[in-house]
Image (cartoon, rainbow, N blue to C red; front, side):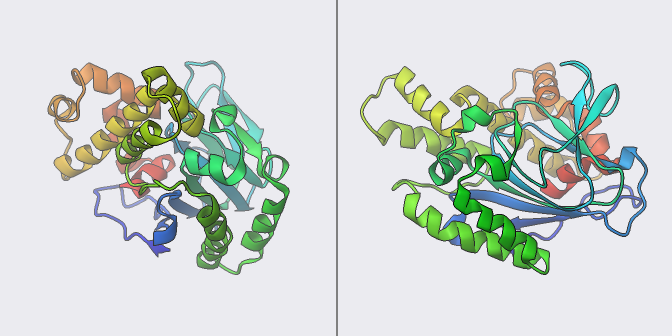
Length: 302
């Protein structure tokens, strides 16, 4: 598995290195999106800096909390922010599985932490585990309680590994033969969300009897846990995110032009989708990426 070098991005010099983003080996690109490792061991952060903000995502996830005490931040109400007016509840375990998330989430810890998160395509997760992504939508669950019994060996191997590279190697060695045995004949490459959603639609057309729009939508929702319209929305939003980084340089993007170039009706439409997926307007998100420690995963993703 190869790690990605960080991309140049104008940010505050007071921010920590964002972490590491690893891409899967060639045999697993149709199964895994990425592995993200983050450690704040040996650093001193205040409460606000120890918040981790995550966007909504159609991917499933496997998370290992190797050191530290993680908490999930729950908003006081459906429209409330994740950083204020919320409560903090312990994660359901030290090894957590998550389904597709249709709204932004946040976590927090009272001290330094070290963790690893694997992003798994939901259709691949279904094939590997037999667990329907739709049944786990917007949930984080104790992985040891819900995954097949033989997967407990994976947790043991990951925790026994001496370093992050070895942990990722152990994970891939466990997953690769299982994916080889269950991968669909037409498995494609998981690249950006839009590419994956398009391939999923193509698979739906040629997989099994029934070609009506309703049958295809049901097939896609069973595999991904979300309807095609939402998957396409994630793809468009991700494209806008990368286009903003490319077009801005060290300044601010032209949000109206960006909205037009990435398929939104207008700037207000882009802003609504940005708030739905990240919790923030495009401008607030962009400023957070450049100057707020809690937006580290967005910096890493760029």
